[in-house]
Length: 236
Ligand code: ATP
Image (cartoon, rainbow, N blue to C red; front, side, top):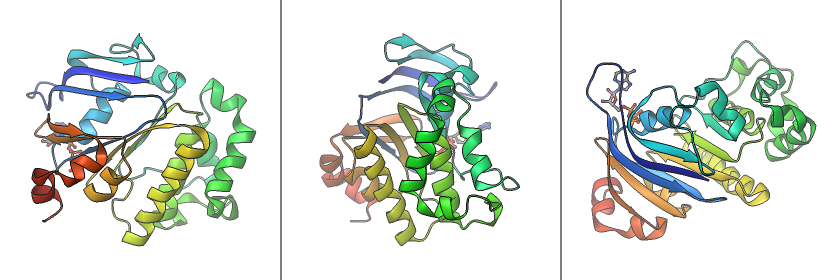
């Protein structure tokens, strides 16, 4: 679905943040990228979304080179980005937020079915459809951010630290929902997370990103059992 090949990227004139990063996301796969603060996880997502340019390497989506494609066109290829910190529109209602996600042609065409599915996965969004998004709890806002991403009818959902700032039980609920959604519609998911144990447990493949480089990769369970991961990230 998405192939990230040896990319280098960074911000304006400063030195590169990502150095030769390669990641493959197959159809329907769940891929996790874990790593410490400042490793470049959000920067990776910005490079995939096109909001920062590549300095080297390339990104292909279903075989098409999208390295230089306008960021605004990428959602139309089925790439949805659920940003860090959720970033819902607080003074718009829940339903209006979801409608904002349906800005792709496919999302508009499939809006009714998508809305029904989103409400089935997240019944609280249906209950609160006419409420301002700013009045929702953190967990509900995260569900809304995911719902807004799903409203674009994506093939790949990129989730930037969905558990951030959530109570552990709510974060678990969000992880469970992601698994359910993936199972239901065969969606590819790219997750970046600091909750390393959970992120790797569910992953078909995991990558460890440190100071902009992939330092370890492998099957999620195997990575979780790796001594280096256990020591550096799981406190064992
Ligand atoms: P966190 O979990 O803290 O968000 P991260 O792994 O997502 O960490 P990034 O946010 O991608 O890390 O940051 C990677 C590096 O890029 C950091 O050194 C950061 O200071 C730098 N950086 C991030 N955003 C910008 C920016 N807009 N301009 C310049 N440098 C930036």
